Structure formats: structure tokens, C-alpha cells
Image (tube, rainbow, N blue to C red):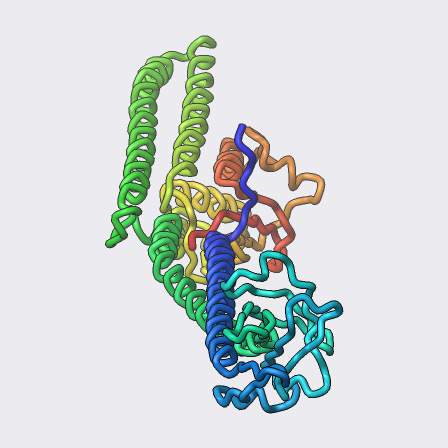
Length: 458
């Protein structure tokens, strides 16, 4: 099994990865540039020291009986400035201890501590020497063996040295400028990557909004232009949505076919039994009524279950509610019961099938009309992701110990009232199928309040 990838923002993952790569790349590039510049400055200093060594070699002369004579080279004024960082010195090979025969004014009263000559020091080529200055600083030095043409002239060793600060100071200035440039480059690259990520991920945000519209019922499929990389995903989503809609439609068709197939023989049996007055005929009529109720009940559950699996359901509540109230006014016209919609009812939508909403509201309002004395009021309110419908009546109310039992199948609290005891059970079953609930509460009108809570559409 592959290790689980920790959850997090794709944007921040890409940005963090790019930032790490930018930092590593710029760090390596900066280190390489600095190393190249240091090597270049050191080579340039060595070239300058070699040139100064040539000048010094030309300025050395030997005077018989007097010794060495050096015409001060005028090639670089730093040789004349004390402790300037650029020095020269001449000593005699073979002297033990080494004694400087001549030195630049820049050394002031100090002497370069040269290592003891070796046999290889008689070679004419310039050789670098590891030296330390009088103040402990590191010096870059070149040494050359010089044999003057005079017969009594001894072999000489000429040394030209430069302070390492001549390399370190320009390198430090370059490093500071390089850090500023690299920081500005890194900031620009990070900003460019952030903008690029924003542009690259914008289609995903647009896809999320289109999916939310489908889930909320504002659209049936994903429409619009998407990048080529997202087109296969959008097409697969649309195929799933189409298959889901086809599945729901097939379930509705099969439920209707089943209802027709079962109701037809039940009707025939009921009609045949109605023409008889025997005990068997009465039993058949009773069982036919029970079978019809069972068929209606289970078909309603199957239809609601198919609707719950569907996507994009959006049923406005007020239009069906007005139609139900008009129907109930005609149905209960002989009792002069007023069916009203509460003034503060909101225009919300139910995330489910319209016919299921009709069935639930119709049963609740009809039940309230049977118990009401003169008034039934229906209110609609939104509570977060829930849609709550309150059906109030001014009837006798429901005892607290009977409020849970009244939703059981076949239960009638008053057998004198018309009904089969299945309506509230169907409401409870449909509500629970959609993930909602139904409960009985005391009503402000003095009777009962039946509160139906269902999932609301966005």
C-alpha cells in the first residue's frame, strides 16, 4: 500500500515546492557565482603580483663592494604607503637566518617571515608562497630567484605579496549586492509563481461553483468552457449526472408500473368482494384495503429513496403549499375551517421531489383540518441547512404521552375521526428517508403543532 498523502491545500503545496526549488537553485547559483568571482579576483591579484615582480626584477642592481641597489619601482604607489597591503622584499639565498637585503616602504619596520629556501627554489619560475603578515593576516605572495650577471653577485630571492583583504573586500561587496539581487529575483519568481497558480487553479474554482449549482438544483449538468486537461473530468461528471437522472427516472417508471400492476388485481378482487355479503367477502375487502395501503406506503418510500440519490433537486415550497391550502379549503368547506399561510413564511426550496412534498404537506394539513375548530396556520422558515414547516391548529391538542405514538403505523388517537392511521406514518417515513424528521409540539393557537424539518436546497 502506498503511504497516505496528508490533506492540505494544493495551492500551498505547489507554492511551497516551487519556493523550495527557487531557494535551492538561487542558493547554488549564488554560491557558484561567488566562487567564480573569488577565483577570478585571486587570479587577477596573482597576475598583478607577477607584473610587480617583473618590475622589481628590473629595478635590482648589484654594486661591487657595496652590495645590492634597488631603484624604487614607481609602478604602484601602495608600495610606498605604510601597511597598504602590497609589499616586496629581497633576501639572499643561503643566508641563515634569512635577512632582508631590501624591502618596500609599505612594510615600514617589519619584515616578511619567508620560509627557508629549498633546492627547488633555484628554479626560475615564479612560485606562490604561504605567508603570514606581521599582524597575523594571510598574504598572497609570489617568489622568484634572480641571479645577477656580476661575478660576485649572490643569488637573490625576490618576493611580492598582497594582503588577502585585496580579495576579500571586493568579494564582500559583490556578496552583498548578490544577496540583494538574489532576494529581489526570488521575490519576483515567487510572485510570478503565485500569480501563475492563481490563474492555473481558477478553472478548478469555476468547476467547484458549477458543481455547487448542480447540487443546489440551479443546473442539471456542468456547462461552460474548461481547460483541455479538465475536459475529461467534466465529461465524466456529466455522464454520472446523466446516469443518475436516468436511474431516478427508471425507478419512478418501475414504481408506477408496479403500482398499476398491483392495483389492477386488487381492484378486481375488491369489486368482486363488494358484490358479496359473506364473511369471506368482508375479509377479502379488508385485506384488499390493507394491501392497497401497503403498496402505497412502500411505493412512496421507494420513490423517495430514488429521489434522495438524485442530484440537483430543488422544489420551491410556497407554490405547492398554496395549492394544498386551496384544496383543503374546498375539502373542508362544510366545517368553515380557515387555512392560512403565516405572514412571515419564507420563500425557500426543498431538496427533494415535488410530489413527495405534496404528499407530506397534504397529509399534515389534512390532519390539522380534521382536528381544528376554526383555523389552521402553516409557516415556513429556514434554519441553516434545514427547512422547517410548522402546521398549527386550534383543536384540542395532543397529550404529551401520545405525541410519539401518533406517528406509528395504523394508530388513530380518535377512532371517531375519519382516516386510516397511515397518513402521518407516510409523512414520517418520507421525512426520515430524506434525512429529516417530524415531531408534535404544543401550538400557540391552543391545539397541536406538527413540525416537519427537511433538507433545504441551496
